[in-house]
Image 1 (cartoon, rainbow, N blue to C red):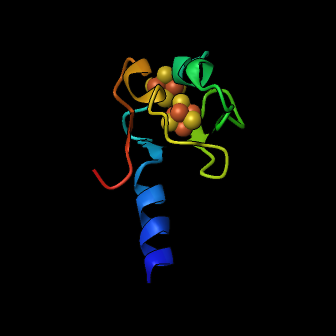
Image 2 (image 1 turned 180 degrees about the horizontal axis):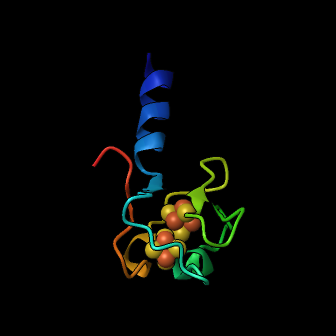
Length: 75
Ligand code: SF4
Ligand code: SF4
């Protein structure tokens, strides 16, 4: 049970990209501030996404996106 709780807490601290708000910038500035390279963009012109296996939950990307497209998962 405690393992489940830990997993859920970790998931909640990982932000997500809200596709509807993301402007798919030529250069994703949120991606530039991520020191663990967890923000991946397969295609320019498409919203990036956050790899939960790389993200360590520092939240630096949240204020970095000028469009508020990155939010905490579950908030
Ligand atoms: S997450 Fe923000 S900075 Fe990155 S492409 Fe989307 S709108 Fe632009
Ligand atoms: S929370 Fe930190 S590690 Fe995770 S994607 Fe954002 S900047 Fe990268």
